[in-house]
Image 1 (cartoon, rainbow, N blue to C red):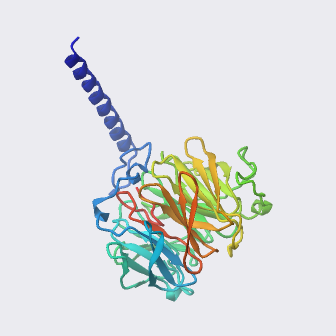
Image 2: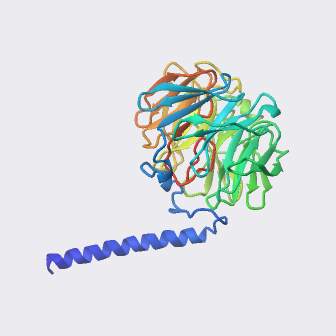
Length: 410
């Protein structure tokens, strides 16, 4: 056999394998029966594949590299240069800004000004190309903001009103309100791999989850969560004490779907860990202890790990220099593979991962700082900001579209 023949056969084999893999993914995507108008799922085994490092959309090519930090009690957004690690601007906004949310089309960053009263609520757009805000749009009680997978509706999470308001994603005019009376403190959400349903966390009233049919816009399930029912229970990886208060009173916070779309991970501030829920069956199947005051969840850019912020306190009022930490869960094993304490104590809260995946940016909620955490070593750089920084976002981020919050990218 000649060398040329060997190379030809090798190339043919490689092309055949590649074609088989491509065909398999195409068939798997078709089998998902996606919500009408939703972009295709490129890799059903990893729905985060298009949010990997280097997968920046052409839409964000001219956007400034910045970290936008809403400060709840200062009524400002602090703007950080992520290369220089310093504040370069401060934007005055409406009362009680909670989260900075990338729009579905990646062209706007929405500031959620919750307001001290419902009439003060508003959404302020930031142009990511200039880093400057535009005129605010009055919106009642915008605690959080999400977008349907087809991009046709924004979902304003009106926590105080116990309802989800479906709105026009550009002008924010009201399309429909969905009451959620059984979900006190409706809070964070994530969407199924096919875009047909979402699971929302209920922070107050003992905690729990609701499942929402996004296509028909109705609540189709309610689930209570319980820590003591699972063999995975055990001491927190940070070595801290486990508070029994969660026995009678849960407080679920952030929620994220697994890369294969089968499971949802739910952070609970009272349970000091992450619940694991089967999304289709809407049934709890496990619990993973992480640290005190478990709060935020952020997938790594390669889709193999989940960064978990532990705020260091069970109280909604927080604690200055508490035993805050970040835990790292491996998706494949559901095991905690690392725990990084904040040096000197702290309160890591909300944020996201840099475009290259090398830095986890999170607010230090009750220490008035932002943490830039090296995702390889856990080393922490601290940057002072205003009072009570909350749902910061890093921009730009990889991905084709945003489902909301601080960058739930797909």
